[in-house]
Image (tube, rainbow, N blue to C red; front, side):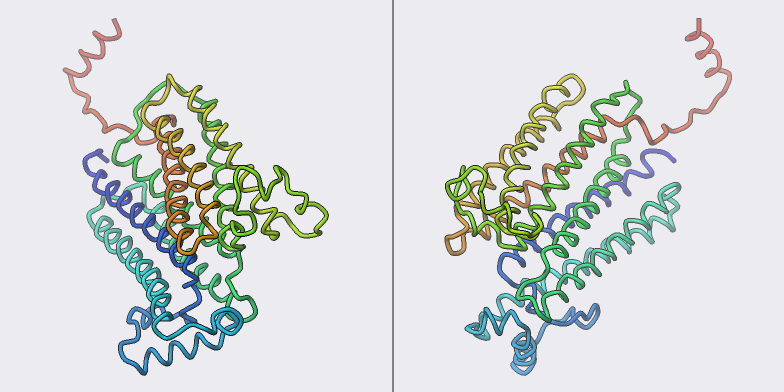
Length: 356
């Protein structure tokens, strides 16, 4: 299929990727404003419409008052304050529903136009991944409705990483259709190096989700040391897992950040002859990410500051992932065949001349 025919499909996938970024940022705002448990039911269709009168708001607030988060932490909340947190959770869910339509409707249109030869299985896989992301969102919320005062940080991380994988897949496939990679020299070692960095970043993003879920920034709002220690002694001998203890999670997240920054710097140097703007973007983003992480940590104890620093930190982390995916796409060998050229007498003569 010609590049011109699949280009609209690629542009659509990149637009969906941008919408996924917005959704992840809305999820970050929802988490940092403690809004995630304000809606205690999952109604994929009826839940589109929020309460529209006093009776509806009173009913929604009464349901929230039955869960542990309100009873143990938020009993001071007024109805007006509840409406604020309800909005963010409702908007986050609404955007997820709109994302589903934004993907499904063009998919049907392109399918009918026969633009998806060789792509149908991949696109159906992306649709299934998006659906799994929605289900995981409810599984996460359900974890905070019975005993916990917040959602499980493990389920939060699963919810977030599903979104990250979806974003990476959309960017990878979309770029391949908008600007199909041309035949070039093989960069096997650089491909492997970039893949290792992406794996390390995925681990770091996972620990970042643990940080958010456990509110781990608050246990050590200091930098560059962790409460005056480079390696906090409190992480040893506690008997818990390093993904469950807030101080240990904080230490691991910081350590991974420094290692990742060093890795990207080394990668930036060794790819100087193979890559262009994407390597500079990745280096700049990782340095900005470390800086924002330190600022978010220092600002975490100040009311209202963590929200914006935290969302900015999350956005740059996703941008770094996209930059590495773009670099990986540039290093990859051609996977989209060029349009076939009709073979005729003139073509045969040209080929014979070139052979001579």
